[in-house]
Length: 321
Image (cartoon, rainbow, N blue to C red):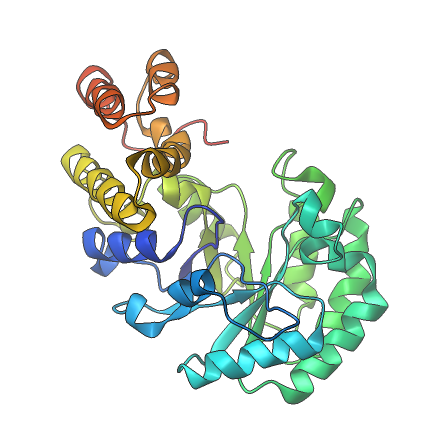
């Protein structure tokens, strides 16, 4: 059983991955991280920001799979070649991003609207790729029944892993996951199937694995941001300690301050992480506004101090959105 850390734009960048690996090694570590999506350019140039994400020296000590967002087989294959030259042996195709700006370009989940074009893309990619290619996908744009024909397409190719988030694009992250469609796909997929979606506690993850023994893995995102020790708990280890969480978050703030060259920019990034991590504190609503309004280091530290000293620390994240 693989436990994978989902690609999350604005969260699981190279700074976060390195810091997580430092504070949560061993049984708390994911079997592999995925980069937030990288969009290959038509000019076939790697931007400095992209390079920061994928350079092997920025990702030592853990397994990493780069995720690519593209509807151009030529651009996708060019990037696969560049990554192969860096030592990567697998990439992931993003067919799941539900963002409107991405979908409007027929990328991410938007690529699912044109199965014929997707089939041609995959035919070219799998015929020429120098690396293994896995796929992370949604069920379709608006109707989960769209997934039947899509799965027929996926089954034509040597997909190394099919990661299914069982919502449609229109759901974004609302509505319940469509488990019956996922379970049908699990039975019919020729590729190993990994599940992704709305699992936030160790108990929920263990139950899902028990009731779906055919899956090859779980990909966790929001639950792992909320509780960075979640994988240790799933594997039967100790729960997250409050002191470790504080040290982890303080180190992230310091690292982002160096990266961005601005404490205000670092605080904005930390607020995104806190939007999930607050779920580890009972009654966090009364201090959420204080944290949200903190824009300078003193106010941010004051808000975080209040959260850690005044609120009850919970063993599991609750009400993750």
